[in-house]
Structures are given as C-alpha cells and as structure tokens.
Amino acid sequence: MKVFKKIILLIMIFILLIFITSLFVKIKTTKYISDNLPSSKKYDYIIVLGSAVYNGKPRAILEARLKKAIDLYQKGVASKILMTGDHKDDGYNEVDVMKNYAIENGVAEDDIILDHLGLSTYDSIYRAINIFQIKKAVIVSQKYHLYRAIYIAKAYGIDAYGVWSETTNDRLQIIREIREILARDKDYIKTLFKVRSSI
Image (tube, rainbow, N blue to C red):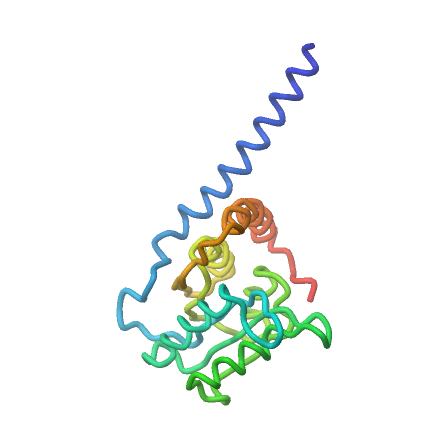
C-alpha cells in the first residue's frame, strides 16, 4: 500500500511539473505577445510558422496566420517574410502553398524566403537563427502557440515579438491547447540544453 501511495505521489508531482513548466513559459513571454505591434518598431523579418494545407490551399489556421503576416508586411513592419513549414515529401508542401497565397495577396515574390525544413516549431526557430541569420523578427501564429515560439526565440537571442492571428474555434481547439502544454515542456527542455536541430 505504501508503494502504491508513493507511485501516486510521484505521478502527481510529475503532472504538476508539466503544468508549472508550461505556465513558466507563458509568464516569461506574455509581455512579448499581442494581437498587433505596440509601436512603430521595425523588424528584419516576419516569420510565419507553418500549419496544415489541403489540396493546395492553406487550412483555416494557416490562412489566418498568412493574413496577419501580409497585413504586417503591407504596414511596413518588415520588408521580408520567412515562411517556414513542412515539405516532408513531394506530395506535401506547406511552404509553397504559403508562398503562393502571399503572392496572390500582394506580397512581392522577392520578399519571400522559404524554409522547407521547418518540421517543428523548434526546428523553425532554430533554423531562422542558425541558417537564415535572423536577429530581429515578428513571429506570427495563434496565441496559444506563440508562447512557445517566442520562448525559443528569446532563449536563442532573437529580438522577437509575437503577433497572434485568429484562433479557429472548432472542436479540435481544446486538443490543440492540451497538446501545446506538453510541447512547451518539450521545447523548454530543448532550449535549456540548447539541443541542435536535427535538420
């Protein structure tokens, strides 16, 4: 019985640590996240984090990110947009869909840079720094996702600010929120030990 109680206690402590770490990431980054930029500060890049596409079109979450990024670009926040996402094989290509959408909505093709190997949030931010040499950027995603993205960016020394796009209110949102808690913990550990991107 004592062993069972110890196991239960350890499980509870583990679960508590998961939530504390996620909360820590949110607290550390909240002041760097908004639905718009708080000033006329200029950035080198707008970074759009990829998400699902279907049939050559961005799904609602990604389309919301692209609309926000295009709006910031047209306001002159940055002159370049880095689009980073999954292009794992010839049959699935987030970044080309993102690029085509942006061009169709007034972004100059020469102002778009593509990262076809942004297979995860961590990889995308890590590569933005180490491959594309970005030092000052606005990162665009949904609010629940930006806490993690900004935390990674700040941990690696990017002068980063997060601007959120609309969150799709569907039945999957609660699953995204729960999954994000675990993802924050995972990437907190990765940034703590400065794990190199595998890409």
